[in-house]
Image 1: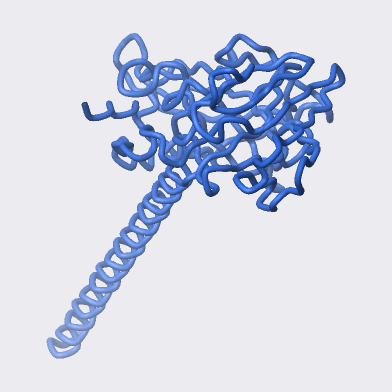
Image 2: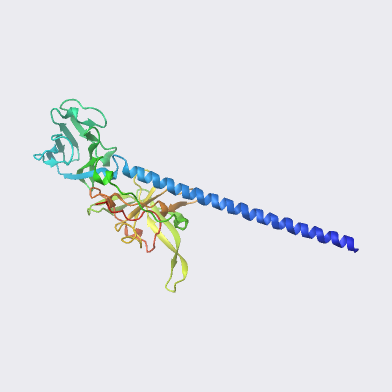
Length: 329
């Protein structure tokens, strides 16, 4: 082989090597750009979810507007803000009307004469002396009895066979002086692809709420996911966790849970998180970056469910919403 041929071969190999290196570099750069774009898209998704969460919480009829919870027993009681009412509200007309609850849960409100100008029923002006049937939240969309130009209202709720009037006021201090929400940094490591194992159709589970009431709720199945934890030797290992799901009626998988941050960085009683129904492959995404505080973290007028034993995780879930900020003095 002469010197010229050898030189040409060497040059060809060098150019090929350079081309290969450039291709590898271009590929790595493209992968880095794609990873950055995916990360930014995910962060944008979580930030948008946080904005929606705050908007829901602070809307005029949101959880922060609650100002009263009045449990009622079968019989009749006058409702209004005057002192002589059997059920005295903290806001609204002096006399709204006579509320009657039957033993079968049928509830009516006989409006006080002259109050029709101050009250609406589901957004509509009632007739004089109207007798209104109130639908509780357990039987569909609850009837809204609104007053104070629509800025205040009450609905009828049912919990474990007990009935109560839940009162809202858009000008409640818990809403007007709300100090905002705190979160952990967005943590992609707390987003898990989880396996769904379905229970037999119709299975239920007993849920205890913060008032000690026990309610049966639909229990469609469990989610199983693996997360890194430290073992006794200080080594990082994968550990499997399982959580029981509840269906609140919209088909999504709902979880009330506690973890190793509860009572420290996060609200002591619990947090909550949703997951979409499992796909055809039997999996769904459980993203703790979308974990949030229950209403009882902000108001005493709610009936939050407590975590099932299986949903008390021996894991630090350093993602999602932190404990509520204190109100300014």
